[in-house]
Image (cartoon, rainbow, N blue to C red; front, top):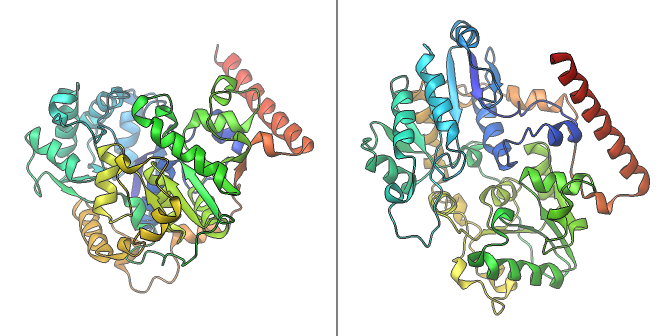
Amino acid sequence: MRILMRGAIDPLEVMSPSKFIIENHTGGNIGNLLYLSSIARTILTDGTVIDYVNLKRQRIDDEYIEYVNENYDIFLIPLANAFKLKGHDELTIISRFVKKLKIPCCIIGVGIQQMLFSDESFYDYYKYNDEAKEMLSAVLEKSPIIGVRGEYSADYLKTLGFIPEKDYTVIGCPSLFTYGENLPKTKIIYLTRFSKIAFNSKSEWEQQEFYTDFIDYLKMNMNRFENTVYVQQRIDDIRMIYLDTLKQNLKKNKFYDVSKAISFTNANSWIEYLKNSVDFSFGSRIHGNVAAILGGVPSVTVPFDKRVYELADYHNIPMIDYKSINEDLNLYDVFNNADFSSIQRGHKERFVHYIDFLHKIGLKTVYDSKRASEFPYDKIMKSRTYPGVIESYDALPYEEKANRYREAFLMYSDKLDNLKRQL
C-alpha cells in the first residue's frame, strides 16, 4: 500500500537542526511531530510506503493531482486544532485538494481551539463554520468516518449537522497510542529542590492578561528549583534559541532564562531526553506533557483551552484547574496530589477503539499480526542517528556557537542560490 500523509516532515528523516529550523519542518509546533510519528509507527507495515506532503508548500495543479491519483492508495489527514481563528485557510486548501482526488481521503484526529473560560458555543464563536463544514463534507465523500480529538470537538461537528458514530467518532490523540496498548509506567520519584523539572507554556499567550498568573507561577518555580529546563515548541521560539541574532525582540521579553531553553527536531529524541534526564513535566502545552508521559515521566497539565482539556480528559492525563494557579499554590503539593497512574485507566480500551477506527478507514496496522517481532518503523529508526537535544545558543561554548552559525550560513546560502536559479 502506498500512503500519502499530510505532514511537514517525514518523522523518520534525519535532518540537521539548521535545515529543520530554517525551513520550518515543524508545521509551526514540534508537538506535531508526536502524533505524526505515532501514526507512522502504527501503520508502517511490511510492504507499506508512506510519503508526506505539506499542502501549504506543495503546488497543487492538475499534474500533481494526477500523480497522487495514480501513485497512492489513500490520502491521510492528521490534524490538530484545525478549527481556530487563525490558519483557517488550510481548510479551503484541503477541501479543494480532496475534491479533486479519486482515492480515499481520511482525517485522523481534528479538534477545535477555544478558551475554557468562554461559555459561548463554538459554532457561534467560530467565524469559519461554512469552510469547516465544506472540508468535512468533502472528506466524508471519500471516507467512511472522521476521527475527532475529544467531546468538545464532537459537539461542534454535531452542531454542523454531522452524525455521531456515523460521520465521526472520538479517538483522542494518536500520540498517546505511540506504544500501542501499553503506556510506559510512570517512574516513582520524590520531588525535591534538586529535581530536574521541564516547564512548558503557550508562548503566544505570554502577553495576554488571562495568562499572567500562570506565567508568574512558572517564573517563580523556575527560580525556586535549581535544575530546570524550558521546552520550546513553537518555531519562532526555537529559532530564537538556535541563533543569537534571530528573534532578539522575542528574547528580551521572555520571563525565563533563555539559556535554559531547549528543543528537538524529532519525536524520539524528545521522548528519550525527558525519559533519561527529567523528573517532572509541568505546563499548559498538551504535547509537551504527552512527550513526558511517553517517556514514563510524571506530568501535570494546566489546560487553558478546550482542545487541551478534551484531550487530557479523554486520556485521563493529570491536570489542574488554571483558576487554582497563584503564588500560594505549592508545586510540591501539585506533584504529591497528582494521580500519575490515571493515564493507565481505560487506555487499552481507547487503543482498541483507535485501531478499530483505522481498520474502518481501510488501514492495516502493525498490531494486526501477532508474529511481528520488530516494527518496521523502529527498525528504520535504529539504523539511523538523529540529532539530540537542541540547546540554547546562550549555553554553548564558543566553538559550538561558531559551528552553528557556519551551518546556518551555508543553509541560507543554498536557499539563496536555489531562488536565483528559479528566476
